[in-house]
Image (cartoon, rainbow, N blue to C red; front, side):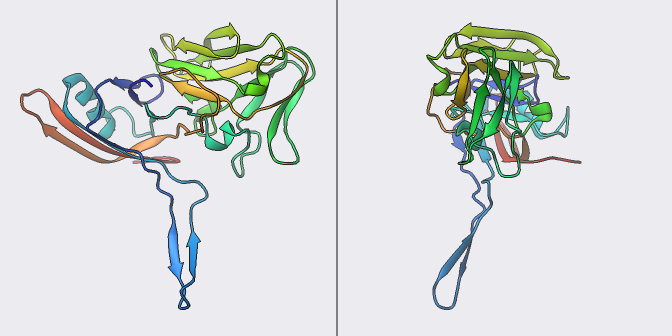
Length: 273
């Protein structure tokens, strides 16, 4: 996997120094109630909330300054992206399974071009119904503005579409790089089953696409979008949620100007103030 990238889309800082401690345990939101008879009832959040705790010893000055600006919200109070180097697939968990999150039908894919549709089966699994060879599916982020995945220039991104797309026709895989408004800058593409490319200058967001290259019905389960490595089939979706800082420590190191930095982060829907 690659390094940690953190910051707003288009301006994420790469932290290439390994953290001395790295805790990514999700907050399950579980509460336990025990009755007088000894029976236990559990309640929990529908979707666990991601939390990260990171700490570095003797962090290089440039990296320390970047993290300090993020923690103190110098440039923006809005949530930012964290590309976790241990996450093998930044698609949402249900999206990677070819399903839709509760209350979010058809927000995670759309028909890129060609004729056909994207629809759910009776079992709740989503498929691409392609009625011509040009039918192409596009993957959308349910957590970021305009359904786009955040990125920054220099980030290596790899996309592998579902296994059902492979071997049926002249399959293509594409990533369209977009600026801060969502407008297309350029497109990287390959004929085959996986694309690995580097985000160009000016890139703030991306959209992955794939075309099976033949008429048919194709399951959307098993896709993988990876930052900093090569996408593989069968990797569970980890998500790429917006995050905000809830705790921050900054200790001058010896020798100066190195600093020891600690960050507590939480997945958020919004951040104000």
